[in-house]
Amino acid sequence: MRLVAIDLDGTLLDPDHALRATTIRAVTDAVDAGLDVVIASSRGPASIQPIMGRLGLTGEFIAAQGAITGRFAPDGTLTVIDETPIPLPLAQKVVTAALRLAASVSWIAGMEWSVPWMDAQVDEQTEVLGRQPVIRDLRTATQPPHKLLAIVHKSRVDMVDPLLRMLPPGVTATLSHPNFVEITAEGVDKGAALERLCHRHGIAAGEVAAIGDGHNDAGMLRFAGTAVAMGNAVAELRAEASLITGSNAEDGVAAALRTLVAARSRS
Image 1: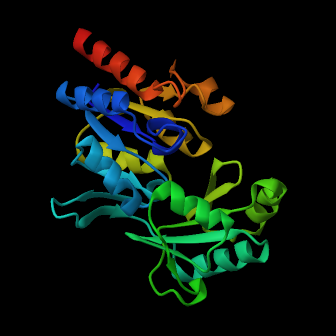
Image 2: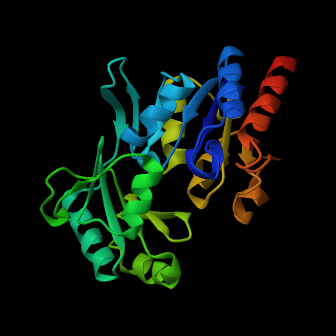
């Protein structure tokens, strides 16, 4: 075991989207034991940066559902190593489709998060992420997004399927929550990004573990030699996992890391 890729929301972070001391200690111990720990999240880089800082991680990370792989310089500057943005005309079509169904739309381009207006869904994300978006007309944006996030109200989950049917060819859509549609360029996936990262560093799939909870983590769990599903993971992920740990309310990542470190020390 050389590398562990870990999702954030629902996995590394507890139900209040916070880092617990037990988890921080387990990540530190794993790094001290010689494991590379890679954050692999649907969040944008700016929302990953403070978490990496608290964990003391300085290596590469995967953001925007796999559309960006990068690292942060000591001064906080983002260096993009690998990226696949959505072509601008295609992104505009997605925005039009999502707004037509009254979905809340976020435009993530590098370190920037833009929305057309504030609403209940954006307010909730602002609280979770601890940062404010830029308000602008997305139809006039000039920087192609790495990811678009369409959130339908929790009372209107029935609108997710119509939204998926309205998306144009050339994009990939995955669910991170029942009402969260993560939209990227075609072929973008955490698993594909993790595979490229490992290839650059000469790491085989059998030397990789991946830990996640949602449908959007399936690609990286399928790539990894050791697939770890959280106790709170969707049923499909738990069915394919080689190891099921506790939930994110039970310090499941910490328990999984201790198991992986112990297995590494015995090999």
